[in-house]
Length: 371
Image (cartoon, rainbow, N blue to C red):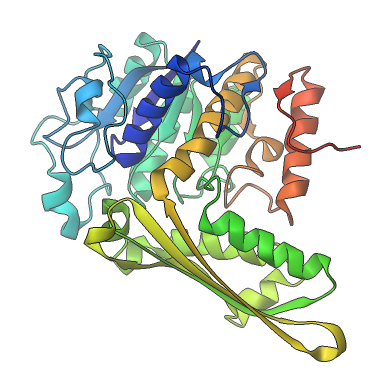
């Protein structure tokens, strides 16, 4: 069993909790990246702790909080009472001024770092998953520090650079044998993974990316939150580097502003649907031009959760083996901004399998073979 704590009970949390229940009841494993990682299946995930700041969710059983305003993920399975009451969290920079009416902060005493550490230990949390809004820099570091002090693995699903930064939290996690995975979760078939695959294909076929962009629109609170440009900087950097790193000259492409990837618009009626437009201009044989345009339409939260259920299990394996700090092989396949960029997702998956194999852990199914 894997006891999971969630920070931020928004749309991803709703999809995650429902999906775990769905696969627990189902004989089918269709749609999963990996049915088995080590000895853990998706159905082994349990939710034992939850934090939010909304008056709609704090004090409510987690099974009800995932459907509270402003969440919009459809209810596709009945969730039994989980016996987990959502606790009041630390607001810090988690609520942008233009999101006050959406997130509706509760006027309740906020916990100290010591309070969170004690809660994590008392509730037997193995993994703490950060699902805060983009731009929550201070709040993300607050919870990462609490997790490390409590000896709880930290999965950073948002674009705040913790696993990929050289700061004291990472150092402390290494010394405390506490794993940190991150940063910024990739979707199963999301815009970043598709864009990276196309850019990698250009390079593999002997051509060269000259310029490229990725424009994303959606209608949930994630996209509305990112209307404030100052909260968007790390997200843009994460997505842009994820694409640029597939090429031989990533620094040049970024310096000359010939690669752009990031959220570009909020359209309320789209709800949780994300639409992405990707464009690549490449130079190929005999200096000829090649232009590629792709439109992608996905359920934004389903794509994230498909990857999240893997990272939770990988984090538990690292915790079982008392491996602390930020481990690149555990993050490279799953995150847009891992500690060290990897040029292709094929290479990143090789690293994952090799890392797990060296720990004596199995993976089923193996999506690729490597030598």
